[in-house]
Amino acid sequence: EYATNINNLSTVYQVQGKYAEAITLNKEALEITKKIIGTNHPEYAVRVANLSRLYYEQHKYREALSLANEAYKIYLKTLGANHPTTKNILEGLQMCKAKIKEKASLLVPYKS
Image 1 (cartoon, rainbow, N blue to C red):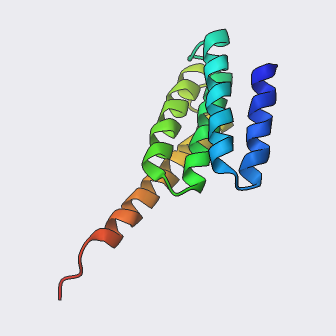
Image 2: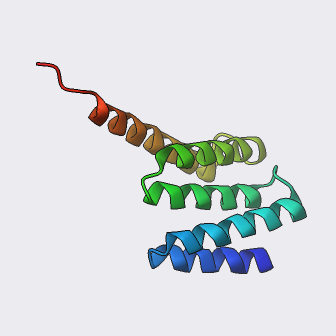
Image 3: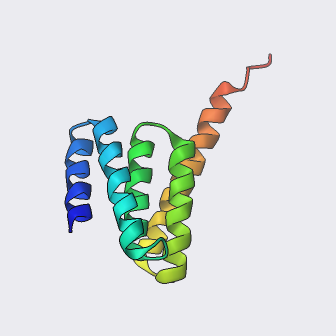
């Protein structure tokens, strides 16, 4: 329950745009959840996905992608490929990849 409360407070900070505070609390909730239920549990994946969203909102797409991929693997293993949550995180993965590709294309010098 403590981890859930910390995670909820992290969400409040996220909505307020206080990303540093939100990330700190989210990581704490993630570690507590990891110690209590391990890493192969949907609740752990929720925490990982939340952290991924925090990074995504800050345009840190590589970090977001890595975490979304971790959450996806857990959801796939524990909930299956057809579960709505698994499909949702897969969409998040695709969004991260698209943003990384978009950002990379902006760095390519224009040739005339």
